[in-house]
Image (cartoon, rainbow, N blue to C red; front, side):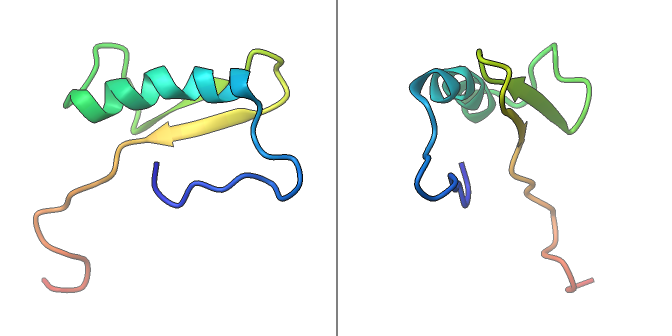
Length: 67
């Protein structure tokens, strides 16, 4: 996770973190999963209170602004 933040004073519940962790691991260990149809995917916590949008870190051939 890059620049991960949680709301001050509330943090993130352990069930929401567990929902994200397996997807984060899949993103980290593979180039692309069969179920990836977009540049991102949404993971909703088990309570349905929060949805997290996850995406892969982009590694462009040339850094922005150097072309």
